[in-house]
Image (tube, rainbow, N blue to C red; front, side, top):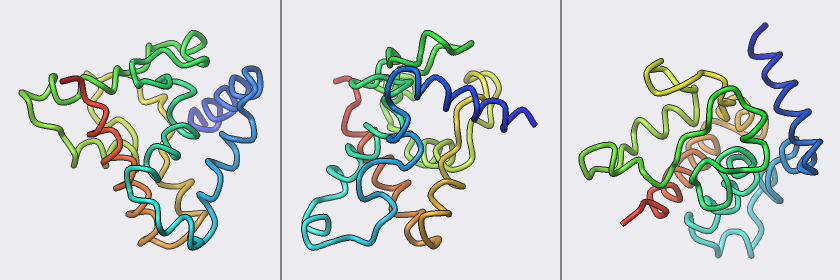
Length: 147
């Protein structure tokens, strides 16, 4: 029940800040088979596009937790540019992928209110496409780490 409530809250926030279609449908082409133009883009480009559609409303365009929906959340979104710094200089790719797909599993790392994208990605395609989307987002997050 709580997940359904949070989904409603996030959807209401997204609509309020003008992000409704992006949050509902995801980034352009996310649920469609790759076209020639999409296939030519690398995983970093795909990850950046998905980030803008799925993550930026809360985590902000630069990943520092200052997205337009952040003020309405009970817990401030994580600064995604500090994941490597918070992990002794190693980007926690496996943990990031798990959080993207299944949500936050360690209460000390914040609320479990973050939407999990695995179920959304499964509606858009098979398990291989879920892995591809999670991997692209994970690689993008690794690319925005503070130096």
